[in-house]
Amino acid sequence: MRVRFAVVGASLSAAVVLVGCSSAITGAAVPESGGSGADASTAPTSKSSSGGSGKGSVQEWVDTFCAGSAPVFELSGEFFVAANKLPSKDYAALKSTMIGYFQQVAPELEDLGEELDALGAPSGSTTALHEEAVEYFRSTAGFVRKAMTGMAPLDPADPAFATKLNKVEGGKEANPGLAVKLANKLAADPAFKPAFTASSDCEAMNRVLTEYASVLKG
Image (cartoon, rainbow, N blue to C red; front, top):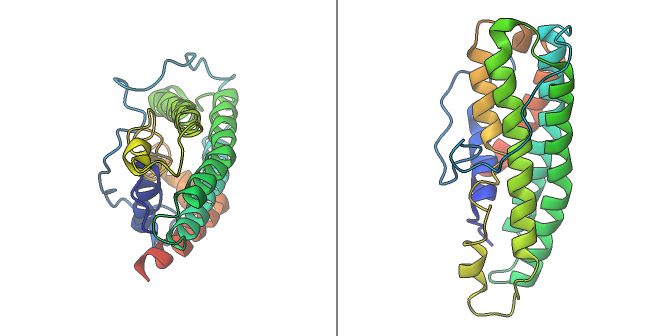
């Protein structure tokens, strides 16, 4: 079953931009999706990121970002592959698969937001991007949980199930794939770029993205 729910297409189609890069992250633009991600006008209100002591190095911050983002993309990849193998209109299986994915990815997003917040911005020049990253992971986790709650009462046997699924509140914004766009933004910033290039965690994250990008191309 080709899944068109916003979170699915954005999560893996965005991964294509990282294929073949030797320095962990490329500067390629990420295709826009229908979701607005953690846009300030739509994101749920979350506590302000006060950050930690800010005494950690830029390298530690970047390693944490990439190490925490990798499982988000791996879960997204596994879900996308599994969902596309489902029989057409097997909505019961689709609902079960989607909720299982949401249950796994939400805490990964939340944990990464908390870890980055605890580290704090490594320097004054990185404060804005640090706060953007923390807000992104927190708000996206919130959207995922909202979408999961909205899906729970839907009846797969309802002829209007597909229509109702695509109208679930939080669905379009529950977009872990926008983490790729954020990663590219961070990697292009002079304060973060050397750390992304040097990070083995970012190389590992890129391998995950490359694996699932090749599945998409196939």
